[in-house]
Length: 49
Length: 348
Image (cartoon, rainbow over all chains, first blue to last red; front, side, top):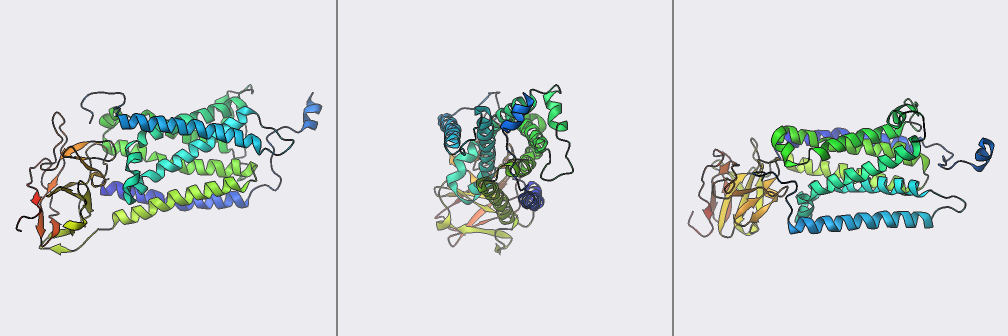
């Protein structure tokens, strides 16, 4: 790999790394308390029908 | 070496590699769905389409994590060189798995709306200001577009037409695609699923990928040896030079130099392959030619020229052996210039 590419490559990771970690930590800390269920509750299905 | 157009330059090794890869993918998908159903909480059920969405999503992310680790790991140990040689097939396969994941998501979650499903991805959840409610599917969609551009231009046809510099710059987009996918999962699956497994996997992937790239990046930028002898840079003692392999020397200025040992001969060439800038010094000598670890481009040791009918040329460097130690002159000869190899055992 050319020297210039190597520097760009390193610079990208030096910037992306902290950004990824920061978002990851924020996302984990801000998780909603109640889990969101992907399936519809049976009561709602009955109401809809 | 793209003298003639071939869709894929198959070798027996590549065929075996692809077969193992496809078998591994099939096994992962089956195991993920079967084990997922076994450990589903009582009273809850998951539709096979949802199971497939999760299976393909996790598989695509794990494959991308592995692909991004291959480069740094291949610099640390030769064991990962075969993966480096087949990285392109892995990358295109990862794109297709991600495409299946996206297609299933669009069909399952957006296909029954009156809105165009592709538009629905962007407008069905307008909470762009929220963190935990962010429309994470948009991030995955953008990452998929980046992966598509890379898969579509992965063939040598595009490398030849775009030029190695632009091609390489385009393919560095994979780093941004990876970042988008980490955030896609962090704001998506991790918000809905309380299982610590997803958080642990995501954290492990991120620490491994970022850590490996930063560490090898620092090592690669550091000049390897400043010991000079009248302007010549020290490479290594002869005993430390493995046959058919190279030592890479990084001078303060200019490109890195790959110093190869082939039996009792020592030769030095530029470390940068003319094809895609691959690290020639991480390759080996095959059939008497220096062979790039990325895609198998070859150069003769004595003059840095590709064997006929190919026409690529790289710079050569003068070497000398003094008291059992190999030195290289950091001033490059013009690409393709013949340079007599140093002979081990000859009087310096």
